Image 1 (cartoon, helix red, strand yellow):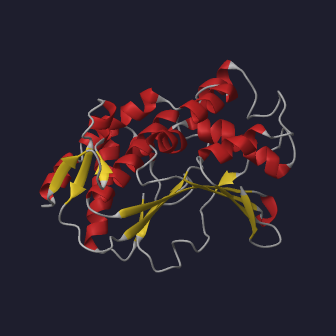
Image 2 (spheres, one colour):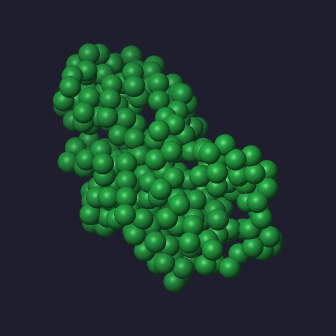
Length: 284
């Protein structure tokens, strides 16, 4: 983990993968049985999606059921690939792999895009995982499916996905906690990505633990309020991309993720918007 001072009150913490994130969480010397990250009761476990121990275990060992649940969301977008007119060839290596074939154990699960010429365009995808307590686990999971499907779709259309998982909490006095976790996308680390964008354990166990490290206490009065990633990585660089906001942003609507079908439709709408003008940030 690297600390980058933004100003007198704010620091950006950059984590090099989920493993790095878990290591910092487990080293939390402020953790105790009263902290929200470690508290173990039926109500807290339902809210967080499991115990802190569950969060660490799934972050380290993966969650095959969660990864497999993405298949329906990805499969729904296959028609868009066929309609794109690109020439894809199945092989044991290639530009991207088919999620369904990979889960089924098919060795030739990779596809090559024979129409790609020269350097492909890099598309940043920023995902703010910070959600208010009123956002249900179902919404978080369906939103994660939409994000995975979007990244898969972009790769199949020949783009290079630059995936950034961020989380920003706002505190009184203008203080913010900025977190950024880098996830490999060549190929996409499905286990890590699924856990971070679709599993409430990431936000409501591990991220709370990171907040305790930042706030230097085991039971803070607040874990902060969701707010936006306003650093100039994507918004001021003139590069087009996608930004999945926190639940506090005006563009966020849980109606987009009430069901998997809603999530699929939202992804298609975002892709259509991006196709109209690739010089913009599309909010999701």
